[in-house]
Structure formats: structure tokens, C-alpha cells
Image (tube, rainbow, N blue to C red; front, side, top):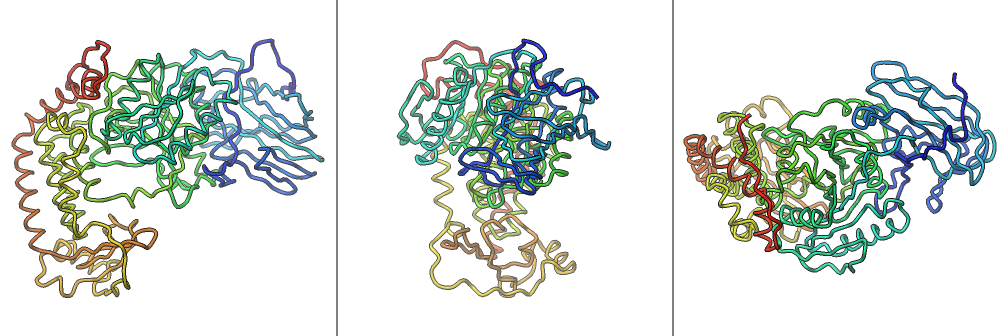
Amino acid sequence: MTSIVSQPLTQRTHHTLQSLLWPERGISTEHLLYLRLFGPAAYSDSTHSIVFSAGGTAEFNTAANLFNLGKWRRHCALEDLGLRLEGEGRFELVVFQTLPQRSWERPVNEVIELQAGEPFRLDLTPLLEAEPVGLVYFTLRALGEGKLTGAAWETRQAPRRQPQLALSITTFKREAAVEASAARFEAFMAETPLAPHLHLIVVDNGRSAAIRPSKHVTLIGNENLGGSGGFARGLLEAEARGATHCLFMDDDASVHMGAVERTWTFLAYATDPKTAVAGGMTMANHRWALWENGAVFERHCQPQWLGVDLRNFDQVAHMEMESTKDKPHNFYGGWWYFAFPIAETTYRPFPFFVRGDDISFSIANDFDIVTLPGVVCFQDADFSDKESAQTLYLDLRSHIVHHLALPQMDIGLFKTLTMPGWFFMRSLFQCHYESLSALNLAVEDVLRGPAFFAENADMAERRAAIAAFRKDEAWKPLTGSLPRPRIRFNPHRRLPRLLMKFTLNGHLLPFFRLYGNRLVLQSGQRGRIRETWGAAEITYVSADGKQSFTVRHSKRAALREGWRMLRNGIRLMREYPRLKTEWRKGYAELASTEFWTRRLEIAPEPAPAPAPMAAQ
């Protein structure tokens, strides 16, 4: 085996590719996402270091700190890799290389001496297998008293570019969250070597955030045109500042600032100028569980790697190696964290207001999207808690538009019709008749064409209209005791479930309201149809237990909204060819710099609208 080298092999500069991420209060303190300690080894939050006594071991085969060599080789043509360690003491160092469908390699197993103030460097290039897919990580076992204060994967290859990365946050009436995010960014800029290449743009749709502009932070008051308008404004500002890349982020910025450094570095080395980086998202109730690590869209959103336990190395390794492979054409990244090259952005955000804008943006623009270890946002709210008649309206109309407007998403008339049908039946089975009305409105607005979206970019009229008919499905303070559950049809038994399916969950049974199940469910259970088979009355309770609403079986409401949906479906079927042509032309016009500079009343830089979506 080639011997260990603890000094630079040449005079070439060492460039950090990926430093250690540590647990961080307010982001995530799930230690097993970052490090695994065994024996006499202890981690210090205040110093971000690990202290060892003899026999203490630290492993970094973790979701945040393993190194995906396959992605770096594939997307960045990485040919030189080293490991830098900082600390003091005598250790057994082991470097592992994990390969798919093969036993793991152990290219390094040596005793090393760390000295305070002198980085230890190990050249791994001649030791690693030249495989297109694989992971690398290291472990340390102390042979006496010792300390690890830092580590990083590095290279002597020079970056291909120096990205100027503008971070763009859109916020509305979340003053405390966005102000804390801006403060975190300012503190980060005081210590990161990338400070000359980063700038934060906060687009305040509520014009209420008390953020002091600085050389690192720009605050922009903006008309409330939702996430679409806010991020479009941030992108225009990034272009005006001369940024080469833009990073769309949530206003609570619940991501490690070290993940921003990883993103910048990957973009700096990427061989394809179309490379974009999508951040993952964890679940709100368990920050070790993934909600998604990128997603695929076809008729509905399909989160990738839903439920992966980020504490489990086998699950993480499988996800990382599989995600190194080619992405499908309908892969997209959520705007809680999405970094992309501005020069390759043919289409700007479409004015959906919210919901669906990130999907069409990713798919319409020809990005090469990558996910990276440790580039993950930690959400505070469960997506299922946010479902309402308004969100269903927004979801359905954007879903249909994606398939009408984007040629690469063309699925034909029949499959397009199944989308409103699926949304409709899902709400019908749960007795959400106000949601049915919102879904009908969504189809009708798509039938109105792109001009309707241009004229209603602020969604004020539609938000008011949906709010006006929301009575049963509106949260109200919980007073008194909850209804007593009544179960006469067991939804977990096959025969009752089949009966409910064939009778549209009792809508074809006479007097079903008198004898159907009475349920009490948590807000997060909304949308779980299996729980609601046989239900004639459902009471939902908010996560904090302070609010509730109750929906009840109604054949009259079901017939009214069902007849309306049937008419809308027939019209969609009859006008489908015309709608496709109109939407492809209209999408290009509305997802343009010209549209947004005019709508936002910004002095425009002359720029042609993108070409209409041509059939592929």
C-alpha cells in the first residue's frame, strides 16, 4: 500500500471540497446525522470538537459528512482527493470506500499523529478505486488522549469558475424567522472565505421585515405576488448584481451555512454549466427522516427517498449511490433550497402565486440537477398540516398546467383527465365538499387560459372567493369535548373497505349519514383515505389540540359538485388541442423577464421572451 503523506505533495494550493458539518441548535441536534461516537469520546457543542481518551472512536459514515466520490467524479471530473485532519493526539485512521454491489474497500488503515496548529494531510488519489459510483468516509480511534477540531475533504485541482452566488429568500409576514436568517447569514459572512462570492437578497412581500441592509444583505419590499413573484424579483435582482448563480431558499433558512459552502464549491467545479443543486427536506416531527431528496412529477408529486432514516448508514449509502445515476426528465428541486445557473435559465418563474412554481421551473429549464450529502433543510411544519381547500385549488391547477404547457410533460388527454378525477374522488371520499368546489374552480381557471394567470398574479380575488365559501372546512377554536367516535364499518377490514369503494364511500347508500362512522382524526391525517372509509362525519383536530373542524356526509353537495366536475371534464376534453397550443405559447410569455419587469414595475433590461414551447 502506498505510504501515508502528512505534508503537501506539491506546492499547489489545497482547495476544500467538503468540511465537517456539526450539530447546530435551531437547525438539527440529531447527532447521528453528523457523527457516531463509541467508548471514551465526547463532543463539545461550544467548540465543535471531539475529545478522546484511549479507545474512544469517532465515525463519520453519516448523512451529513460522508463524501460522495461518485457525484464528484461524474459531475466535476474530480481526479485528485485528499483528507485534512486538525487536532492533536495519536490515532488509528481508517478510510473506507463504499462501492455498490461489492464489499467495502479499506484503502487506509494507519497510525497517525496529529499536532495542534499543523494540519495533517493525506493524499488519497493513488489509493481509491476509480469507480463511477461510490462513497468515502473515515473513522478515528484514539490511542491515548486526543482531540479532533476539524476535518475536510480537499483537492489540488483548481476550480473551473468562481461563482457569484446570490441567495434569494422570499418572505411574507414571517418577520422573526427571516430576521433570524439574515442575522445568521451576516455572522456566517464574517467567517467564511467565500464572503466575496455570496450575497443575500431578501424579498419582503409583506413589507414588514426589520432587516438592516448591508454590504452582504439587500432588502427589497415587493408586492405580494406569492413565492412566484418573490423569487422572480430575487432572480431579477441577482442578474442586476452580476450574479452567475442564484439560490432560492426558505425564509427560515433552516439549513447549515456549511451546506451553502458545499453548494458553491460543487458549482465551482462542475463540468456542465447547467449543473444545479437541490436540497433535501426532512420531516417536521422527526428530523432524522427524509420528506424528500429531490422529487419527480407526473400527474402528482412523487417525493424521492421519502422516509429514509438519515441515522441509518445502509439506507443513506443506498440513497447516495442510487442518486448518483441519471435523473429522469421530470426530476425537480423544491424552492426551500435550489441553486441554479442564471445563464442557463431560459424560463423565469411562472405566476402560479405558490404551489407548482418550483416544479415547472426545474422541468422547463434544462438543468442538470444534483443532490449532495448534508445539503438538507429541516422543516418545522408538516406538509400534511397545511392542506386546505386553497392549497388543493393551487395544486390541481398547476398540475394540469404542467402537462399542458411543457412539451416534455405531455401525457395525452386521458391521463390529463385523470388528475382532476383523482383530486375529486379523494376529497369526495373525505366529505370535503368545499374542497370539491375549490377543485372545480381550479379546472375552470385553467380553461380560462394563461391570460387569467397574468391578470390574477396576486391571487387576491381567488383567495377571497375560496375564503368566502370555506365554512365547514375552516379551523375554529375547540370548545367543549370532542365527539365520541362511532365505528360501524372497520376501514382496515377487506369487505367493508370494498363496500365503501363500490359505493363511493357511502354516497350511493341510502341514509348513510345516519349510520356511517363518526371519526376524530389529527390534522396530519387529512388526505389519508384509508382512515376515512365508512366515515359519515369526521372531526379534525389541529396539531396543538386547540382548533378543530367537522365535515359531514352530504349527497346533495356531492351531486352538485360532481355534476359541475363532469361538465368541466367534458369541456377540457373538447378543448384539449386548443388549450395545449394556447398554454405553450402563454407559458413562454408569462415565464419571461419582460412579463415580470412589467408586472413588478421594474425598469427593464431589454430581453426577448423565450420561444414558445415546441413539441418534442
